[in-house]
Amino acid sequence: MRSARSHVDVRARADLAAAVVLLIAGGLLAGCSSGPSPQATAASYLADWANRDWSGMRGLVASPPADFVAVNSSALSDLTVTGATFRPGRLRVSGATAREPVTEQLRLAGIGVIDVKTSLALVRRKGNWFVAWSPATIAPKLRPGDQLSLQVSWPPRAQILGVGGVPLTKQAAVVTIGVEGQRIKSANAVRAALLAAGATSQEVSTALTGAKAEPTWFEPVFTVTLARYQQLKPAIYPIPGTVFQELTQRTPITAGLGYVVGSVGPVTAQQLHQLGPPYNAQSVVGQTGLELAYQRQLAGRPGATITVVSRGGTPVGTVARLSAKPGTAVRTSIDPVVQRAAEQALSGERKQAALVAVNARTGQVVASVSDPANGGLNLALDGAFPPGSSFKVITSTALISRGLTPSSPATCPPQITVDGEVFHNAEGTAPISNLLAAFAESCNTAFIGLATRHLTAAEFPATAALYRIGTTPQLGLPAFGGSVPEPTDEADLAATAIGQARVLVSPLIMAMVAAAIDTGVVHAARLVAGAADDKASTTRLQPAVVRYLHQMMAQVVATGTASGKGLPPGTYAKTGTAQYGSGNPLPTDAWLIGFNGNLAFAMVVVDGGEGGPTDGPLVAKFFDLLRQAGG
Image (cartoon, rainbow, N blue to C red; front, side, top):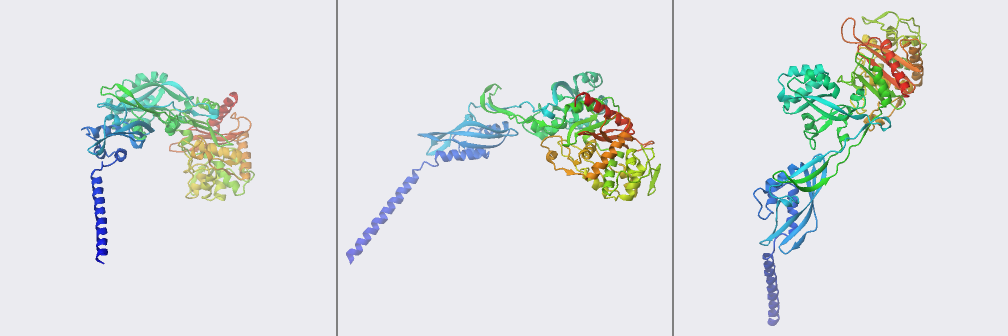
């Protein structure tokens, strides 16, 4: 038994000895380890680089220079890098050195991702692997004292197009008139000179505010043709603080398209803050209209070139390039033929006026004119005016929906009193006996009598909404969709029935009303392809409303307030005379809305008097010019 026990003990001691040997061997092997692999060092360095952990990177570098952090951080900031990733290639080891190719994917602010090819050199020292850093680690050809430089190159600006892809812009010599804060001696003198030259109060105020905030910046006020500048120069050039930039830039093909197409010009300090990189102080950007609204789409994305520049500013070599991405065209429904006819028709009008023409079948705006062309506010699309008697198409819609017809009885007394307020007739004077005659002669008292007997306050905003009045158009530019508040009492209801009280509309929305009556289909106004309302759903008017309004609007031209004004055969219309403000007599805007064929229109002349005599001949001229042009 003893011998057996001794035999077991011997075997146990042998196993223990073997285990100790293994432990010792393992300890010796651990003590001989060369530390992290070159792959691990490279991976850690790239991770720190992506996170801009400069101290972490520095700790992985063999003999980092004193300016290590400054050189690495400035390289990314000089290139406006907002984010970076680093894609390693296959690492190759040769004794105590190694090299790993790396693709830097740098996201440049406002531009995109550009690839820079470089490599990491590694070295083993005292059993550990480190990055053998030099400026060339950041980018090939970069040496001590050199810098990386970013050059931005913009593609040609995309076009703004009209019907059939016709460009709505052309190149022309222009002068941008502006101000520079540090040169201004008298802000009042600058303001007076610019206003006298034709700038709007808003344009001047915006520029002077910008000049005060950034006194060394050129703040544009407005842009004129070179010929116009030569006329204005004697009055504005001597004023300290006014500055001028002459350049060739694109302008609308017609002056009246300035409100739609807009203009381009030197970037302002405020715009530069809003746009951010890659825009800079030398950038030319959209200032108004579609040029402004679709700035990024039209400008596209610039190309980028990263170069190495020596301490003395000499280019050393190109590191990487990123191709520009051209902008895409803004396609509109503007028809240059119709636009020119509309502009020519209004060219002799001395008062502010606006004319909008739309394709009644599609709801597309084919012409938009605001006169004068440099008035500041886009009267045609964004003006807010009382519609006066042109609103009677809305009141008539409500009355017809209540069962009235053109033959329904109506009277036209000289005046009518509602809740103590006296209302008079503005246009019609002929005897009437029914709704058809009241509409044709635009009798206020007849409509007030019918409205107060048959309609409730809620029916006015509800009927207006059938025509999308009160809905803000989303057609690509700011536009006013109108407002028809619910009347608060009987007198307010009476005033609302004849387009007064608090009713406000734009020429755009009234042109759309006329288009809806023409076809029986209510469209959202369309101008820019892809805008929110470009694919908006349509609704239909009641057939009786369409049928009766056609009859009534034809009578306006045949025997009513628009008769004898030269309107072509087949024209259906409604005139309007809208009072506002104060004075004796009150100022009145002159309205005419209607349609001929598939072309619907709305026109207003500010403080123009009666709609028939004022607007009728101008609209007749518009159609005549359109006929001559083959439109």
